[in-house]
Image (cartoon, rainbow, N blue to C red):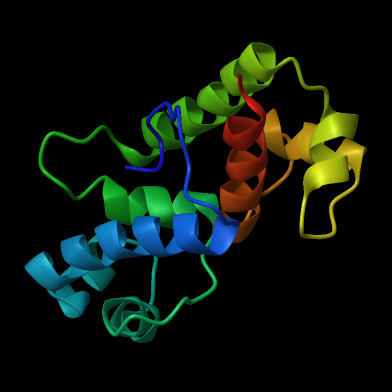
Length: 141
């Protein structure tokens, strides 16, 4: 589950995203895209694409909506809060500041954007979350 504290990550952000998308797709497959669409703000087409193994554009909040449908999982707001808190904790553990995170990202985000997104003051795409998380966990001792 993407909102849990990670101690290791695969070799690339792409592999990490596939791991998380597989988890989300399993939830969609279990419940059905139409049912998940009725319980979330996502369109059935997006959920069908996820289920088919594609990588649709998702926000962190949308991924949390899907994840929250798994048994024993917190609500979407709590999932987002936990995910962002684990990024901050990981930065402390790895002794990284936002400039260091920015310098290792494979996507275009400046340090100010990284800071705002990690603090929840700016919207974060799921892809951005995965990239930031990968940099943080991969940099930890």
